[in-house]
Amino acid sequence: MPANARPIALASAVATAAALGAAALALPALVAEKAPAAAAPAPTLELKDGTLDWGFKESFRKYLLSPVAHGRITVADGAKQAPDNGVFTFVDGTGTYDTGTHATANAFKGSVHFTGHDGALDITMSDVKLATKGSAAPTGEITADVVAKKMDGTVDSKNDIAIAALDMTGVRPGQGTGGAMVFKDIPAKLTKAGADAFAGFYKEGDALDPATLTVKAVTPPPSPDPTPTPTATTPSPTPSATTKPTTTPSTTQAPGKVLDGRLTWGVKESWRTYVDNTCGGDITPAGGATRNGRVYDFGFGRAELDQAARTADAGFVGSVLFECAAHGINWTVSDVRVKATGTSGRLVGDVTTLKGTKNDVTFADLDLSGADYNAMDGVVTLKNVPAELTKDGAAQFAGPNGEEFYPPGTVIDPVTVALTLDEDAELPTTSGGSSSGGSTGGSATGGAAGGGTAGGSVGGGSVGGSGALASTGSEVPAGALLAASGAIAATGAGFVLVVRRRAAQV
Image 1 (cartoon, rainbow, N blue to C red):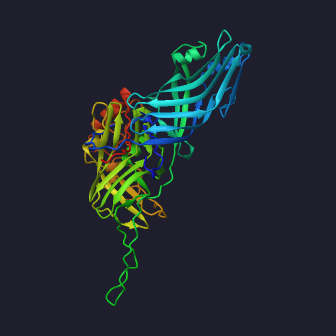
Image 2: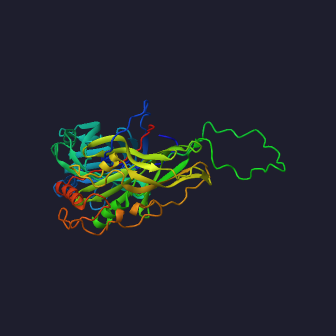
Image 3: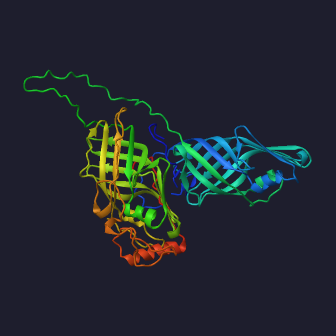
């Protein structure tokens, strides 16, 4: 991971089948471009300040404190238990997230001691860990060291026992305090080893308490440039009557190190309006993305900039989840990347749907003919860059049977990219543009793109029994749009869209 990278929403969600397993790791799909000849390995992110909220099994806790067992539950080494015999919280979690394989590994502090039946039952669980793997069918497990008294009175001690098997496929990341990623209510089942460790009280496959994982990505301090550009040693000529000294430094620099950055983008205004207002759904930024009015700011990942050549390659972190259960919508956009060359560019990423994953997809074409690569107060701002859906990008808004929502060439929200070149420079306040009516400037507002009425119905039909489907600003005939959305609602087939930051050059 580059030294100047900011936290990735794991996304991501750490983005998004399970950013740690499903959501960020539930990641959706655009067509892959040609991979570079020598791709750099995907970076591994360091995680910190993790917690695992898990109670093992509620019925077991209740049994131990019943008059039958006369038992006791004791937490130690930093672990906590919620009031009224609630779940346990294991703390001070540290770990890693592999952005290439989406595998995570998290270790926590804390132990839990279960006793009952006058000491005949005596089990201690410590060194709790949670790991996930895979993105197409993400899974995970909770392991722990277990010390248990056997029926004959001897003590059996085993390390790293896989106690619970986790199903991450339906898990989506939420946003916690301080930019944390929260994976709530992960389904868990008892493993064979877990059943053996708990003296056969329960059998393999029995449902356990769901687990909630909370993690943060470590933000490394910026490292000094090992090869700083030497200062000029040639003295300036003495000004003469015909030669005036330069009092304002040139704003155009040689290729230099980008220290910070931000991308401001709203995806598509009519899409936001439809999901948030008409459909009654939710839009949730997380993992380094934050709400900026009606659009979103994505945090800095890495960037290369050559002002003289008018080229930029910048990756950003964070995720935005679009949800509407009534219409089967579940999209997460994460870790977008802008590739700019001269007057043109593209918005690129990895996208995964329920049908599979495609890498390095060109989602939108960018028009940089009006972009200014000069720095102002140490910041280069490519402001309100117009964007249009590519064929591959448009395909990501299709229904489960290929029904088209937005055709290629549809104007989507423009992007604003700000990159700092000076340690003392501050990112400017930016606002995303609106795609409404084909406009590319100004801040995003409500209303459907293309003049459609966000609150109006299309064809007067109901979708999934939840009311009329509003216009999404597509030029597609209303009947086709209604059919597509109806098919999604009827089948319950939402699809997740996630753009993952790539370490390699596009």
